Length: 74
Image 1 (tube, rainbow, N blue to C red):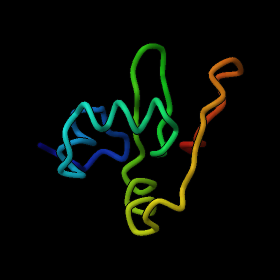
Image 2 (tube, rainbow, N blue to C red):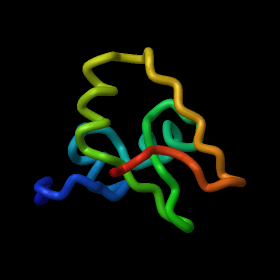
Image 3 (cartoon, rainbow, N blue to C red):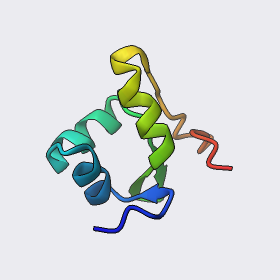
């Protein structure tokens, strides 16, 4: 799997973090992992995941689905 892209899919994020895909979905839906929903698909910023994993469980993120605001990927 090529992790050279800054934006990861659910499958790529699961492989990158070495956790099951089902755990990625659960963490994203509960707002416990930094993620952005694009349409029906979750996306993850690799550098943000690195920061999140280094900080442990201190990160609590709930995307605002109504306004489609979430992580700033710029």
